[in-house]
Amino acid sequence: MIKPYRYVVIYDMGLAFSPIVPKFELMKPKPSTLTLLLILVLQLLMHPAFTLAAQSQKGKDQAELEEILRTNVNFNGDTLTLVARLDSVKLLAEAKRSVPLKWAYYMLMADGFSMAFDRVNSVTDRYYRLAKELVSAGKYDELLQVGLIRQGYYHFIYRDVSSAIPFFLRADDMVKDVKLERVPNITENYGFVSSFYSFIGNQAKAKEYLQKALPFAKKPSRKRIDMLNSLGVYSMKDSLLGAGYRYFKLALKEADLAHDSVWVGIVTGNLADIEAKKGNVEIAIKLLLENVALSRKFDETQDAMRANLELANLYTQQGEWEKAKSHVLEAQSDMEPKPYYLPYMMESKRVLSKVAGGQKRPQEELKYLKEYLQLKDSMDEKLDFEKLQKVAYQWEVQRYAQGLENEGLRRRKDFQTYIYAFIFIVLGLALILLLVNRSKNRIMYMNAALERNQIELSYEKQLVDHELGVLNRSLQDFVNTIKQNDLTIQRFRNEVMENLDHFPDRQEKLNDSLNRMLEKQVMTEERWAKFNDIFERVYPGYLAEEKRANPRLTEYDIRLISLMKLGLNNRNMADLLGITLEGVKKAKQRLKKKMEAE
Image (cartoon, rainbow, N blue to C red; front, side):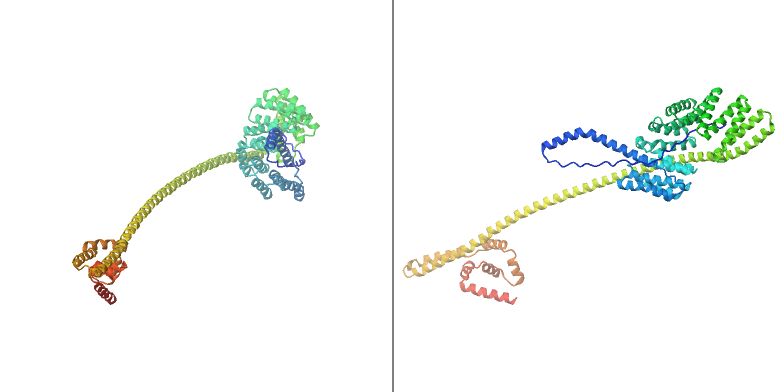
């Protein structure tokens, strides 16, 4: 038996533009304390006003977007008119630099070309892709979800259900991320989702989307009546008669408030079906007759057809064959040779076969039964196709869930990889810092050691320099002393020579004194050893270099060279060496020859 559930999707057309709100610029105040305090007070006072203004502007932008999305894009295949008509939307989006308006332009172009081609096509797919790319940054989750819904519904209405499923699944996965009040035209778009889920047999999910959108439907309105009626239909499909009855009563109340006789008739017919299931046949018949009358009055032929078929079924239950036949024939008069009417044609043949049987006309009964079976075969093919579509949906849901699970595993694996990489980098950096600190410490230690060594070397150098200074001064004092002694001895000699004639008796005593003085002047071996030590330290390597250059030099020659290095004259050297002046001259000549020979 065909269940006469009725629901209609209403589309409103038109285009409205919101006024452009002028921008105000605040003059920069002088940086005085009083001025800053006044500005702070004004900001505190005006903050609520600015907040309300911002919310008001967002509301205007949302209303403008929704109005543009309701633009009529059906030009009976005339794509040139479509492009020209939507050019104003494109220019407005560019002028305002508005991503939502540009997204709306792409969505309208996609819808327009789908209507122009009346099938799935590459141009529509391109505009859906452009719209998705525009809002995929994360800031426009509501627009992204609506784009997925409309693209899924586009495939669904052209019976490409397998292609529609992924879009609806992704849109459903985004429900937790969107704010319902920011979803444009939520009643229409969530209605698309609801129709899809009802088709594939998930009535609970279909009701869920309508319940989310219902608070945004205007009271009273045909859209709200349609949604309440659909909630009742989906409840009936899940055999929830009580829930269905409540929704139908709410829909009927809304229809009465709206003075919408068309919807009064449609909802009355659905209430009649519930009364019939409860066994209240007379009440059901009364409601259905009212439904037919209203449908005829407002030329709702499809609803009248369904009500007449339901009346025929009820009359056959009561055995009123003529009334049943009359209503079946009236229903057939509203049918057309289109796929939509196939289940109703089949139902009419079944009822006529039952009526013929009740009237004892077996030939007619057999005839209608054969026609019924033929239509049933066609209907079974359609039902089999729908079952396949539902199986495909279940398979697609499992594959999508598996994909989400795999994506979750991949993300967790990537996260673990990032964690390990982060730990590795941190440990690497810690090791590098440790090595750097260790190197710094080593360098600091080496620098400290080097500085200490430099200080020690500097100190040692100072000591050496001091010692060399002392030795140099000592050697210079030695030379000066020798020269001074030589002068003293020379004066003494002169005095002795001058006094020899005057004091002959004292000559021997004077000579002894002179000889003692000369003996003290002469260098002993011990004194020579000390002298050589001091000379080597003041002139390091000097005598060694002379020996290396002149291997034939004797110790006496070395002593002579050292005395010459000190700048002593021949007489000084004679006194020190204990020889005569002529002996010194001859010794120097021999030394010169040795050195020249080398």
